[in-house]
Length: 176
Image (cartoon, rainbow, N blue to C red; front, side):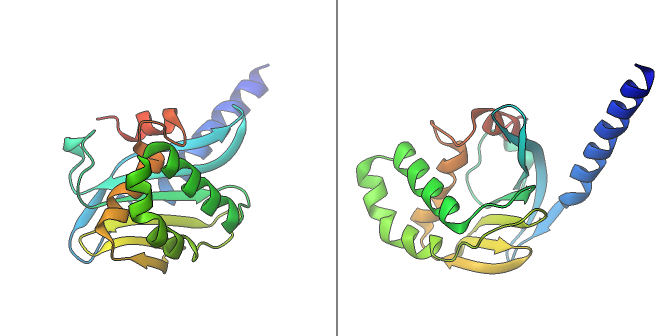
């Protein structure tokens, strides 16, 4: 029993240390420096570890207000197809926006989403909103950009809207 407890504590500490290493404390954009406000693990069905997520803002003291520049980063622990990302973003935006809002961004969303790529264990996606629009980076390389500020404003509804991807993730990332 003692060996089991020691192993569990060791695994917990290692997991915490790995999570801290995965995400930088700050992210520099073309116009500002964003600081890491919070991070969390994302699990499905209570035990399948999908990814870790970190949320960045210019000033974390304003949480839960997330207006302005921001970045949401994901460190993946399993393979996910580009089609899954596209389908999830479309479904969650339709769920969180009015039909009028969704129709305004639908064409630009399709262009932006067309650049999603499959991810494998260890890949990182960064979704960044700046004054220049919305950016998608994979492992530090820009793979998509939309200059539509409207799309950039609405895109974060996937995670922070009234019907988010994961309510626990939303609550943890917006904690002050």
